[in-house]
Amino acid sequence: MLNFMLALFWNLTILAVVVTVCCVFNGWKPAVAANGCYVFIMLAGFAFAFDAALTFLVFADAQRRYGAFSTTGAFVERASSYVTGCVVGLCFARLRMHRHKPRAADPVVIP
Image (tube, rainbow, N blue to C red; front, top):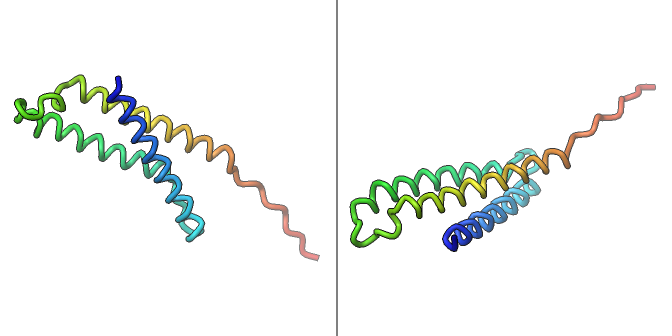
């Protein structure tokens, strides 16, 4: 459980950093609309695939040295922290979409 909580803490920290960087980037270049939550989900997907490859391919061959990392239980804890971080990111993205709804423009009146 401690490994899950630590992995979740780091995933949420990375989510906060990515969202902050994307907000700064959007303020710097307003023409580009980068959504930090979706960028985080993409990064978490790559990290999940890399973690699965390391767990079941690399660490599985070196059981004597990396036995604690190659167990299925340890991978399930890490995978659930990735999924939980992605769910939090999707909730933030949905919240952002509801808060920043585009307003209908006032009609242009030409005299």
